[in-house]
Length: 503
Image (cartoon, rainbow, N blue to C red; front, side):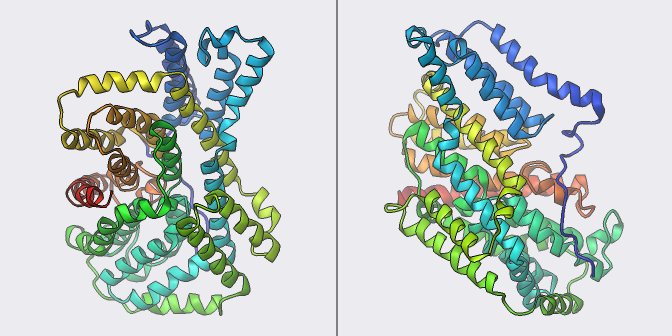
């Protein structure tokens, strides 16, 4: 049976550029939005340079939403433009009184500040872990083992897919790499064994069920672990820079644990009820998985070393954060992987996705930091706080969480959503008397994974499953709404009380 080893991620039709004219339009749109905002009079109480910075920032976010160019290019362009015109976009008139050479140095220092951020390096390091899973085929082995033992029944096969994602999630910061690059190529081989074909009425035999379980599982695990979704790590940095609260790997995990366990346990069954497969039992799938495992053979030396290394990294992230910076722990493990041959240096230099994400997130961290340093975030917090004056902390928490969650319909990137909205919502929350900011921050950041289920473009692997041919548009939107509401209600009814008790 031929295995698909690569998948292409494309945006849904409503978002994807269609031809040169549309691409040109999408390239001009961020510029047009930024220029229009620059022409708008500065709001009262805000410095002009802060408003100008915000105009460029919004242009970058629009660019990230429509992506006429890669996200790293969009972010880098925004940083360069602001640094070149820093006298109007970055520094106050008092700061501009300093000698020109000092201002030029300060502009450059700000432009590259994101590349020294520890969270950005942690993201890069976690991508190298994912490369190790791919090169050693340890990730594929885990998935096949679960399918072998749980794949006879459609329902237990759904649990096998969910458990495979759960096992990979703590060590894979990209749900696109984890679900789209590891899980999807395996389960794409399964529906044909049941006579279930894409873009065909037979899709509902089992293919539709398996694809929906897979995308839903990765959304849950993306919220369950700090290191399971790249924007989670970005959110960590934004929370620290915006409100000064540090969230550890363990705190994140404990905050979402009861809700995560519940969703993992009931989601395959819930999908089985709401989107039932026509085929309930098949003996071919475990047999196929056994054959594929036989081809892999026994655990290789590099697989064993990888398992030891990632477990060591996880232990350091959870228990040794006070003694070793998590990013340094990741770099230590990468060094060990290189010295032992688990990875080659060419695997590092040739990993385009890792370097692209590294540049992308570094520029976004710098841009988000600029919103704070220019005073825009503090101004927004005052204005937002005034609008919500008189509202109790509990009500304000739920209202802001609802707004943050539902506004994801406007974004085709969790990263863009995080960068654009998280600092603003955090700042508004910090102005409300009596607000438990630790709990509020945890509610917002743990919602980033599960909110990806609501649209066919809501998170990285969504377009892969949407384009598989097994999930028709009508079904995807209907199920996305149902599961999105269930996840949101569960977060408020179960997650909020639990976090309030814990923190």
